[in-house]
Image (cartoon, rainbow, N blue to C red):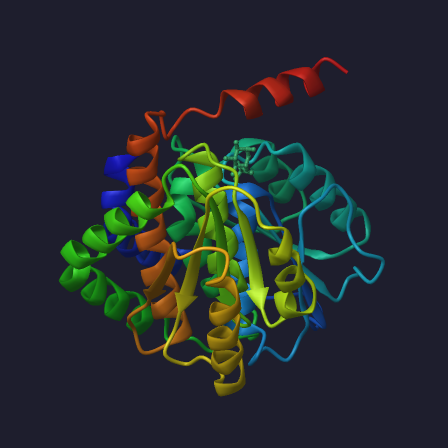
Length: 327
Ligand SMILES: O=P(O)(O)OC[C@H]1O[C@H](O)[C@H](O)[C@@H](O)[C@@H]1O
């Protein structure tokens, strides 16, 4: 896992080249809405892309993480099926249903049944290099989704600039990123982490939780401000045990949300002093999110070391899949 996290910058470079060289066919019908379907380390890519593009995209973007597809899906829907292995049963089921409804299909995968399924309907496929844990390949699913959105005329992102600038920022700050990730990991050890991001950055909060779940073998919670101000904030009155808090911070935070965060912190300080602010670097939401993603990945790795666990193994998920396959 360590070499995969260390290789994030190279993955971004390779992902850019793959997207630039992908040969994609145009849409057959006007696209009125987009459904991104995927689970786990691939599904999170959809959530983050929605954060990045929904402000500018003229079509609604819906992220789907289950077996079915919503009723609105029809021939004017672009369905992006994202499964690194190409064999995740929920994603295969949703894609099959979308195909039955005549949707336009594009897949991001390293192969598997998904590739076959989408090939059979002449959908667009962007192939990414296989053989690694899907969660360690997020750079590919994110970058390829950007290429798909641009290709279908749903976004106009200067992907090359975004990726090259991010790569420069990460390269320049790598030492500092690792140092901060290590500090935060030490603070989070033996606690229940509560991760808060702000509206527009929901995905990076979820991503950190998922990385702490799978890599560090920890239970943790992630919520978004302002939504958590309408429920979870009250729950702090029942806080028990060692709780740590991470605020994922960005320079483009809405003033009103920033004020909310300050008040939230004052309230939460009554229950824990173990509070961390992780500020991103970058000029755009894409660059800032990629910065956070990389730092979070290091943090999850350091936590796996502190917890004495193997960051790669996910035996319990394999067990679950094994049980399901018996039915
Ligand atoms: O990207 P996929 O191959 O569809 O995998 C999606 C998810 O599947 C499994 O549950 C893995 O254990 C997860 O780590 C992974 O993120």
